[in-house]
Image 1 (spheres, rainbow, N blue to C red):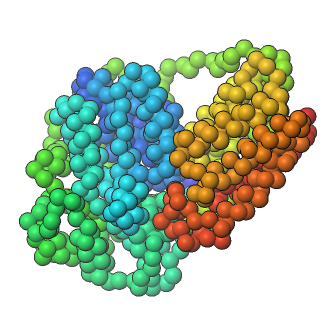
Image 2 (cartoon, helix red, strand yellow):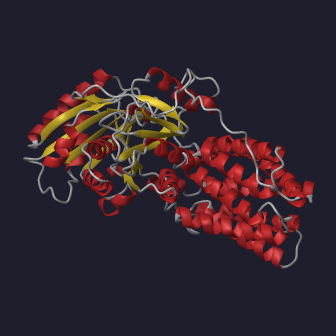
Image 3 (cartoon, rainbow, N blue to C red):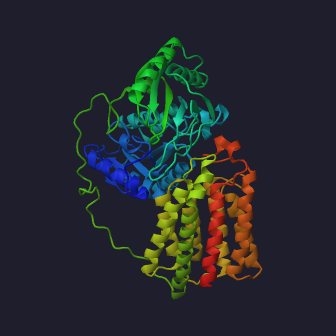
Length: 583
């Protein structure tokens, strides 16, 4: 378990602060993560990686020459927000465009995609690439749905080495695609991980058993087997990966491969070496030439006891890039000339913060009616934060049935931050629209993950609909909820029946629109719609998930409602109470 922490909610921020203080030779802090402390040649493509905390050395430990130009760092097991990614990418950009790279998880796909749109709007040419190497999370026919695990490293490195050679953005992207298509990983675990402040692991493995095909966010494995010897574990890993070769590799004999035996957090290095001796022998027996193998902790999951094996099948070009030198806090290879410091950047204080004084916060002008409505919005967000806090443990338990169990934690972080940001904006005299949009940014930033992106979208859609000039009536609120429903479906790609929050959001929005269309006052219309939401959330227990981290464990979730759907239903009922008090 994680023993050394202060406030669990501040763990990721404090860890990043300590990391930057310890590694000033390689990195400097920026809002949302870190970038290289050394100068990047003008016109070079910037490779910006990222994901949640809890996986060190991924992602911040891989920033430096020969590897990433920057890393956006989210909260524990939660993707960084679009705003954080945008900040890091802007700081890393050297004029050659940006390639955003991340593991293939719904929250990362949403946030990095949004960040790419914002960067493009700023005139920065941007491409994205999601690593999807975990063969246990989807079959070959659905490889685009696979998770990204330890295969992140060879794919990141190939793209970054290509960027160091001065290749243009489209060619760097093609290198990433080639490396990704030739990378496969598979993992096993003997115990789950425990998040800071938690008193139990996200999943457990029975004694004398192992979980097979686990994720790196505390997701349980897709099956269990008897606890193996080291040699038996090596055979399982190697034979499983050799069963699925890239399309242009007919036989492993005579092929070259970059090999990574990765420890997930609490398997000791000596144990890894015992396993690797057999991995190397088995690959040799299959005729595979191992190129620059890596044995150690490269993509972890806090204190999870587990290992994974990654094979990247090399051609001449990929081998050149895999062997290329790199110098980062956690990954070094070969030799590089002395680095030039980046003197054009603002200096940082001992606490790791830019010395520039931030401008005082300002809010757009608002009408008196909108400012009064903002008071109701603030009360509603307070009710949201309180109901989420009261049910956070329950939401985590529901999420842990087939997912990673962090839904309650993420919702608590997001709703608390949203209420705080809304209170600050309200105190400055903001209207209802601005209060909601400030809350949207705060929720996305602090929660991260899929829920952060979706709740940020919901609040922003509502804020846009309400605006700061007029007193919002029931019809305008219903219109905003309808727009939020459409925006969430467009952003996440889910529809009713996929076992997500959409299964509640769509019927709630439809019921609210119908009730306000009948002329009901907002509180009464919201009451009717909240009742619909509660029933819809309960109905998700009968569905099988078709999206998100629960999808590989679909059968396990049957009989349990979707955590995101359940939290949305709780929130709609809590907001009704605030509306009654302020109507």
